[in-house]
Length: 436
Image: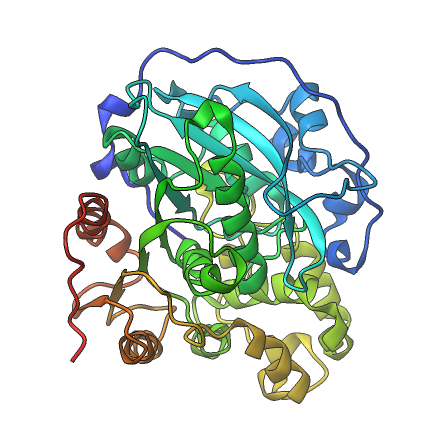
């Protein structure tokens, strides 16, 4: 979905490799459930998504090792513990396009909860600048646009392979001296677009980071959130759920761009158009997150095959060389793959998607929202409405609506102002607000 952000790449983020480490103990992958129904690779292999790495790697990437596969395998049974508890961790070398990132890099497996608040676990990667201060550190929780139906495109995997195309963005945080956290917020079943799941897992990754001694953080660490597109969805949900789910975290600001506040309206906007593959990918994620609504029962034979195919793909992760539903399903309607004329109008679909509407719990800290009027995916009127809800609730909100930017240009053009907004929150300046 996103274009390479080379224009923002800072050479200060790359140099000699940091030291790697040996593998920790492995676990046993949980038995497949409805969540893995449309991902043959997830059913037949472990959580590493190895079915693509072996065949799809390039000279810029490395295949996952047996040590990586062991680390990325969930223990079975899952140990009990509070959300944010770290089960295991390791040193790694993070890279981008074959260049090591200048930072101490660690990965950890932490306990969290899914959209139903049921226990699960996920992975976080934290990058600590080599020049990080001894105290008073800042944490940037950067939610990538993971946008995947396989863990091949999870940040923990992409950072090992050097294939995260958002490295130039979160690299700004390292250059500023911040610790940078990237969580696999879609979880082990790659529940793309399931907002509550994403919010829980992003917040619990922060909880884990604040108790992870090598990161030099603590419960009072000033934390800022940032994400664009799919990453904005996770950032928005973390922001809205924070007060009720993780009130102890010291989040001082968030920035969301290309903000997907209503997945139903996005599906309607792209259905039958050039970007209809995004809708199909979102459907797979929703079916994994909420199988109890029975929406799967409305898919025909071609639809079940489509779900199985898309369930192995990622949107916009071109550096991973993973198949993309955008290239496979342009100008196709969801109705083609169902037994009903209007699958988005079904009561079951409406009830399912109602779980993923933002705006119901305005954040209790300042936010910056940037949106393009020419956005091909996100209806900007929806974003304007959510910004108004935040304002009405008293959330200091700066909402920037660009009349010329689309979804793909704004990721680059909007980044400098978004990061400047976040650094101003770290500096303790009064948060701007253009609420009227």
